[in-house]
Amino acid sequence: MDTRLKIGLRPRPNIGLAGIAPEHPVGRPVATPPARPSVMQAPVLVLNATFEPINVTAVRRALVLMLKGVAQAEETNHAEVHSASKAIQVPSVIRLVSYRHIPQQSRALSRKNILLRDRNTCQFCGDALPASELTLDHVVPRSRGGRSSWENLVACCYGCNNRKGDRTPEEAGLKLQRRPRPFTLHTSRQLMRLIGHRDEKWRKYLFY
Image (cartoon, rainbow, N blue to C red; front, side):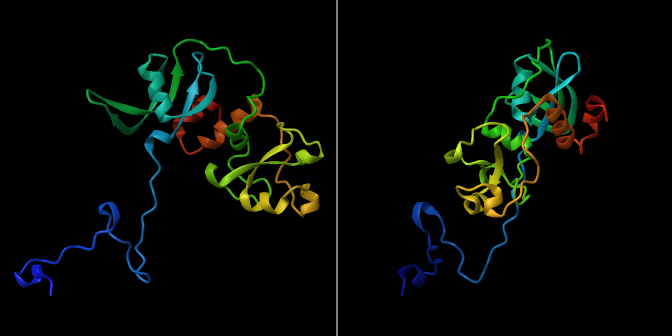
């Protein structure tokens, strides 16, 4: 018998590696609450100095712009973030202090912008997924001369990507949800409206 039991002490807990208790036995699942999205990642509408909507960023980036004096809050939410010396209301809409010229051209071709254009949705099966569960697919495979361009790259889940392989969508029995197009200013405005449709504070800036 354990010496600790003889003298009336509780038995030592069964501790695993690095002080972590072992997992619960099989057959006794423990419900894990879904992770709440961080307020620092919430979308913020960015306006030019002329109040023209030009971008959507995250709260974290918006706060950096505000602290640097580059932008100021036009609309705020009820939440607050705290530093060592003060509390700052979380912005919903910010405006640049100085006017910034925005070229009327497509955005840079990148994975992030392809996923944004395609709304984090697989363009073959239509599933909306986190960015970590999506990849990019060449509609016309590179082995057949397909280019890495706005018109030939689409967001794709790993399942559809494996199914398609080095074939065209028609050969793999897949169909594109929509024709891929360049990311223009018009596309950007549509996405701003899509992202901000639940926030009434955005509406007067997006000309609903």
